[in-house]
Length: 595
Image 1 (cartoon, helix red, strand yellow):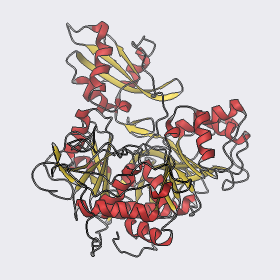
Image 2: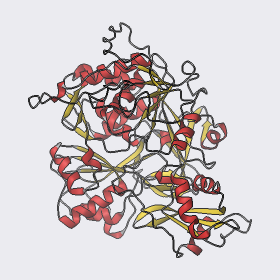
Image 3: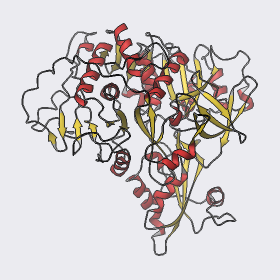
Image 4: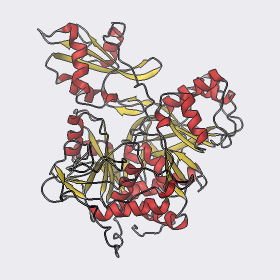
């Protein structure tokens, strides 16, 4: 599995870097998941098998984004085949899934992971996901790589990881099975049930070199029209960024990196790809999402995690827990990366008073449109200045300096504008939206982040707010107009304003609704919540929905979101809605905002 290009340089294709790592560390653990270990050789074999079954240039491939090793196999297999990886959370409402996949013309999907070796005994294949990706909305329109396959959607099974036998300890790494990925039709297997097919013959040809401008993956950001905007990230962008992050994190083959982020957002790539192109072990464990800090910390110690990459909101709560318990992180941890929103100076002061001096606390900033992290700074620990800021004074935390592959400018309005090889190709199928945010100056492509920044004499940037109305929820940039567009579709709503607010110490959305004549105002808030929950992901459902008699308007007659919030924020909202789900949710570094 290779797309051979200068594998030692920043322009190396990502798959080349992974292939070189496999050659250097074939028997080292690549993925650790609940007692099972996949070596680099095994992971390469599984990904190569999937790439062969997908065929060269399969176009956009939808992959169920679940916390399982099979998802990582899917990512590598799609990239090795020259396809475009498109993660979709199966928990999203079907209507949202359909909108996402239709927007990119996706016609191929991977089946949901099946880990139960007995699950294939039924007449139609794996129980629970027979003949299905678990995703909705595979369509037939061309994607960013052109048409992708024959008529009708094609579902391809992910390679199956067999459950470990009751073997001797230390042999769990042998309990992996590279099933052939059998193409499946929309209603079941392409062939009748029967004995497993024999392994496919070895493939003498490696995939041809990939064009650096070819799309590597598609991710979706918030759009004012109510439809998700697919960001097209080319292979040269993710390859250059991963090369830079290996250096930023100081990764070695001895590291063990926790996979914490949602696999539906690009933050997961900064956990997965630098680790697997270094020889480090990537650890997946359900205890990471248990909702219990004691269980989380025990898991980190048990798995000897050395690198944590956490959303800033989660880190804030972790610091409070450690402070209350007068505890520290397990001794194995050497690096803690935070991102998704501004770091609270009060929590930084708490952190600095804990026994954390040995741990690098790295604050990061980035956008989906500029590929993962573009700026970073050590706030505490071995890499931080000895005479750092006095966080007790409330000084805002900086977002850092540009990484080596990033080119930056600050406009006359103070907007951060980013160029260099990590800039995305644009929004697929949305030329006007692309032109509004991506510009070309003297032949160089730039992305307007919408973030206002200031630069200190030492070159470090600090975030100073947004130039537009976009806000962050769970670390994800949200355009209030998108939420308003969805709410306005409810037949009982006459007018709506959506604003950002702090609820229970966290950034959240709040919505103010004016009912139509004859609408049941007493139940409209609950009706709208149910309406939204069936159509959009949870981060687009406001934490508070309040029915009001009127909205505040500007002098020009437009809805004044901030004014409406100021006037009605004290009004009761029923029923109460949690800001976050019960279990910790990994925020995405999916938008231009402070990390």
